[in-house]
Amino acid sequence: MPRPIKPRKIGYIPQNKMFVPYGKKIEFNDYIILLHDELEAIRLKDIENLHQNECAEIMDVSRQTFQLIIDSARKKVARALIEGNPIKIEGGHYTLSKYTQKCPECGKIHKTESFSNHKRRCCGNCQNNKKTH
Image 1 (cartoon, rainbow, N blue to C red):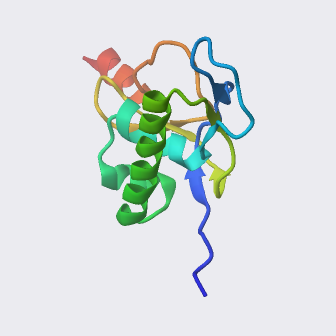
Image 2 (image 1 turned 180 degrees about the vertical axis):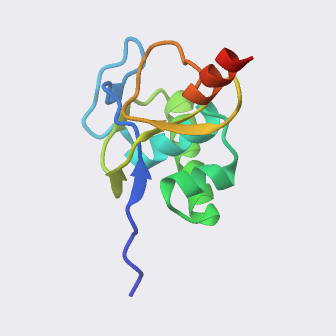
């Protein structure tokens, strides 16, 4: 009997949960389902540019499990792009945590209450250091 899946921590639920290629009619079984934890793995690794061990720590999984999650996510996204399939974001075993991002100024990882579409700002640590110099 396999071990139960431990919920992964994610800090971001997207507003847009479906992406459809331009001009494509949506067929019921045509979707590629991208799980919320897979999207979080892509966000942390490819958008925030965090190291794999940092991503795994944030999501509260082992490094090997993180690698499996991101491999699955990238394969699904690649398949959707190549085959022209819509992507639907839903499901997965997860719990919500604070939104995590990497400061573009100092490179430190910090957590905020929520995602913002505004241009990324540096963390309070950087702002405090600038004021003292």
